[in-house]
Length: 193
Image 1 (cartoon, rainbow, N blue to C red):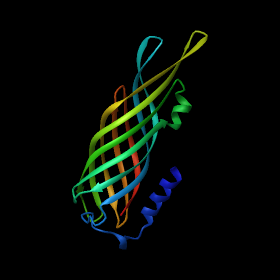
Image 2: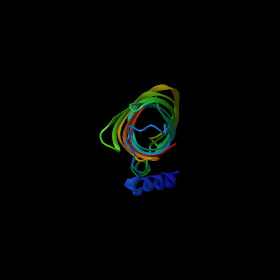
Image 3: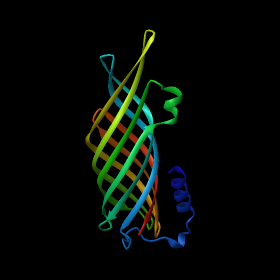
Image 4: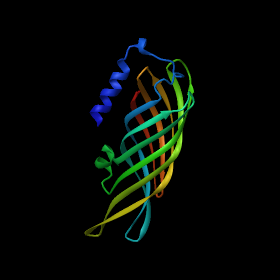
């Protein structure tokens, strides 16, 4: 998944400018996209009868589909998976967080130039997550698993560069998932048809 994301991103960067299209052009209203991101996860958990708050780094992978209704509005559906970040394993070994989120959102776009635009998403996510926590209570290590599923908020704000068939986006995303909140910076590449 990461190799494919990187290949799409690099191909978008080297696409000749002669293929550039006005971002207002919606002759290709369908877009499929994939992306990766890194950020923070804050969560609340219970261990040894005590409620605690903690945070960790998280890596995310996502893919999705967007339909552009007009030059301003689109609907976006995506699947996102989060797992412990690289630094979590190095510095924070007491808790491991993973989540899955299915997201539907509306996207508004504000063109800045022929290819560049700002955008924002607002929608809902159906999520499930689990946290494995450990504590060294005297000589015995205790472990607890906490799970939750439900519906929460999804919001994103970012910048997009679009060519005739390819787009590249960079954004900041926030997911509210009950006792777990995450905010990540993401990079994605999309293909329009």
